[in-house]
Image 1 (cartoon, rainbow, N blue to C red):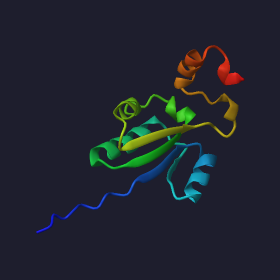
Image 2: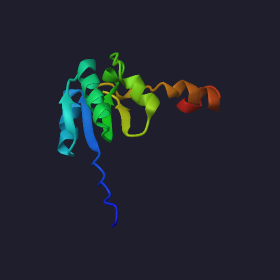
Image 3: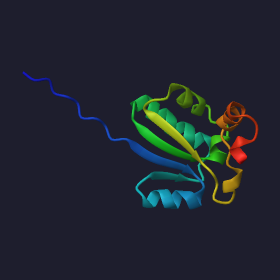
Image 4: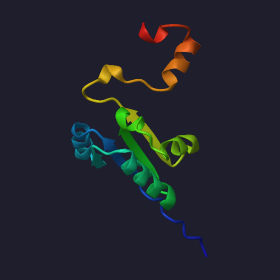
Length: 114
């Protein structure tokens, strides 16, 4: 008898952050948590980890820096939960990632600004 394969669970799409950005993400089918804080992010991440769900989670940069206790764990584990940071609509030029400095050093000096 052939083994029944469990059908893969769909990947959840979720946005947490600025209300104006949340409206746009809702239009393209994301679950949204407008103006979410670190506690809401930790609740979502905890649920995803516990249920072993696949997820693509977009957060604004302000929330990424809000002190979530589970965000570092998810970044370290990689795999089922992918986290992407986006800049605030009001300050797109102020967007910086932790890896920016590492790339700058590898490329030598101010290559990123050229």
